[in-house]
Amino acid sequence: MSTSSATISANPSVTGTSGAAAGRALMIGLAGLALTVVGFFISHDYHAVALAYLVGITYCTAIAIGMLLLVLIHHIFDASWSVLLRRQYEHCFAAFPWLFLLFLPLLVGSWMGTHDLIWPWMNPEHEVHGGTVATDILYQKKSGFLSLGMLTGATVIFFLIWIWLGSRLRKASFTQDQDGDLKWTHMSRVTAALGIPLTALSLTFAAIYWVKSLEYHWFSTMYGVWFFANCVRGALCCGVLIMVWLHRRGDLKGVLNNNHFHSIGMLMLAFTVFWAYVTFSQYFLIWNANVPEETFWYNLRELNHDGSTNQWWYVGLVILFGHFFVPFFALLSYRFKITHHIIRRIAYWILAVILVDLCYNILPALKDEHGDSLPFLSSNLIWVLTSVVGVGGVCVWAYLRSLPGTKIIPIRDPRIGECLTHHE
Image (tube, rainbow, N blue to C red; front, side, top):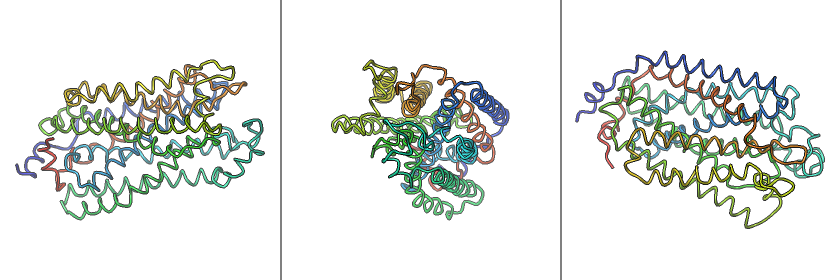
């Protein structure tokens, strides 16, 4: 098969309904953000709304980071089957600057004097383990790391890294469509070699700063790996949704085949097992060591102060079965992986449980007067959903706005011929 002629004829530039869809996505996103802002003013607990917004922005950013990692890995391994998927992720990188902009309200609110807006260690008077942050020896030892200036500077650096890497990958890929020069492939590989360690370190520290530090007494060496697993799983699921959507639109008919979906499905299965391994290892090590400085994190998510079971115990069971057993057994099936409507439903399921997993890690930081975590099923869940819709709508808009700017597939990528004829 002639790579150039077959590819160009089969893949015109994306036009049609993308502009209208982008406008709808933006309106939905702005509506979600507006409702979240309303919730901040009408809620009796603005801290709860701020934490719900942290769930939303972290959820969408994690998926974007996962896409970045998969593209970097694609170039490092000089993969062929994923060229089609890679192009869609490159369009998604357009969301990184907007994610940075949407994260700024949390930082600005902290600098404006609302010290307990999100992270309790910013408030010296916050009560923690029988004392206050100001008198807590553990905070004093960590104060060089856990400070508003360090959090702000680190967050800015994280997003600059992701934006820079995404921009370089987009430039190389999109320009190669025009001139076909192999120097752009080389540029992408050099970017990947530098980008993988930078992305790995930045996502780990982002998880620690944004999420883990909500309970800064807690220790876990697995936390960055847990976050990485959710990043990649979310990215793979969004990739499935995008590919099914483009195929149904007709943009990828005759180009996308069952073997592409089978390969994506195998990766989804692999990272399902990987997530389970990491999560179980963290729980088992903490349970087996039985050290109070570590076990309290799980105790908050299982029991109230009087020993009764709280709602988070059942949320943990939902994560156990919904995040592992259901997708694991579903993705074992070859037919399920290549049947569009089935693999799409599996992707929706995993994306939903990833959101529940983030809620499980973030929202128990909200406590009542007894020190018990506030229940999962409460009005706070409304603000989580509005935040996800708001931030997610902006991200979808950024993708759809970028989509018509280039060919639907990299027509002059040196591996495009192998991709179009991909088989197991």
